[in-house]
Amino acid sequence: MTDMKDFRPSRRGFLGLAAGAGALAAAGTAQEVQAQVATSAHIVILGAGAAGTALANRLVRRLDGARITIVDGRKEHWYQPGFSLIAAGLKAPNYSVSQTTDWLPSGVELKQDFAANIDPEAKTVALQGGEVLSYDYLVVATGLTLDHAAIEGFDLDLVGKEGIGALYAGPDYAAKTWQAAQAYTETGGVGLFTRPVTEMKCAGAPLKHTFLIDDIARKAGGRSKMDVHYMAQNDTLFGVPIVSEKVRMLFGQRQITPEYSHVLKAMDPGAKRATFATPQGDVEMDYDYIHVIPPQRAPQVIRDSGLSWADKWVGEGWMEVDMANLRHLRYPEVFAVGDIAGVPKGKTAASVKWQVPVVEDHLVAQIAGTTADSAYDGYTSCPLITRVGRAMLVEFDYHNNLVPSFPGIIAPLEELWVSWLMKEIALKATYNAMLRGRA
Amino acid sequence: MQELTFGTLIAVFEEIFGQALFWAMVVVAGLITLAYLYVLIRDRAVSWHKFLWAQLSMPVGAVLAVWFVLFETRSSLADIGGPIDVILLLAIAVAGAIGLAILVYTLESLFLRKSED
Image (cartoon, rainbow over all chains, first blue to last red; front, side):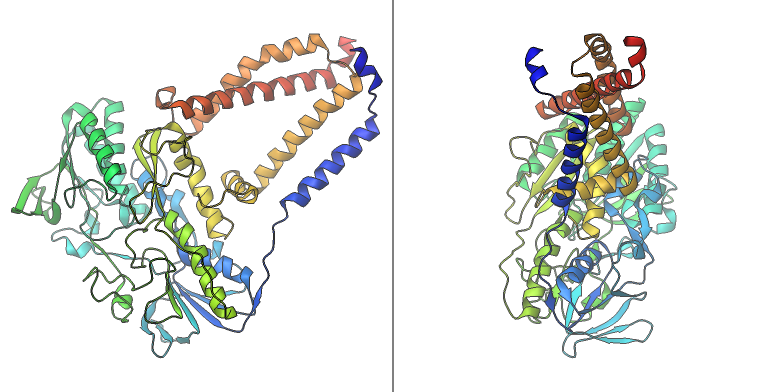
């Protein structure tokens, strides 16, 4: 210790050093501020969900003087990635619920109403309450509609009873789904886990629900009484072939029977019997538990507006936008972001996180009279839960390539605890930061 | 993840714990570290007696940290699935061990100094 005696730091010097380090750290976290574009443009955003809210928060920082109006009649904001957890009894319904106004920046006007009519030629949006908004730029972020009526014999009032679940319908329905699913893990019997043939939000969610209910029953000792079937809409289990193969192997290990090309079309809740459309004709199956995910479409107001694809996804109505910059192909002042965009992939919150900065860049550049080169390449992420405590962090793009965020560290097709931790701890936090335009 | 910047990380941690709790924890961790450095400089030597107690507390800190994370995330050791999981688990254990050792050493130095001398 003799060397140390030559080094005689004083208390005062130490405190000075500590204060200096603190000041340096504070300065380091100050955010870089982008130059604002001055404009008097009126931007109307339809929808205050994940995409609309995140974009509004980013636009107010990028634009000086713009008038931004956001239209949404729903008072509650739903954190939809939480629904799978609620429907497995892992979270309470309020885990996914906040208020729309919690997330909106000052300087943005909220119209608590829904759009009734969009006229892209006249550049106006009429609200259900009668008010008509004129816009210079329109961002459509309405999300999608769950078409429960398309399943004959199904009614949302049935959810939670008689072995019927439907977790997509909202936080309360997700909680009711858990009531029915939990009863099934105790009594056993035949379980049918369905998905629609249309485009859908988070194609991993039907798989997650299947895996979670299987695991919960296994841990409670009731799995041997259960006969679990996954009803695929075509001859795959997931849109990305390499992931589909992995899921097929996991289903094999867990004794989950895949039924390919079985699309739910009708059910008889009294008899507990479901009818599936298959290439060989209709097939009836009895169930003790059925999880219903209905067909999904663009809201009627979009389908009536002339903004939808005419020759793609016929009957679903997704918006006709460029798949890289999400600008409408016929109306350059109109963008779509989130579930409503007619692009081959990307109806997830993770996609929204990547789409929003692209739309922001192109919209701001258009206002400034320049161009932007940022592009969306179909990035979607799905922490595919395979049991309570493990998930696969599956990330992919338009080309069905895996695009891992942590290559060589977090393997995308391996069931990992770290991927579960991300879903359990970091995902909602990242989502909230995204809503505020900070991630 | 698109861009994992320092600012994004801070934003995410603020959302996990809430802004107030997160920064309170940062301040507490910073204060304990400062207090630790302070007693090291004040005493101008490491007390091996205190260090022994700090070392003995390390396994306790490791187990507590791992238990806390498993409990908070409804996981069990059976969920460890790959190399990164083992590395993460060890990192949590090491962080818990070092954290508790520093805390024990600092508390001993600040409050048990008279009896030690």
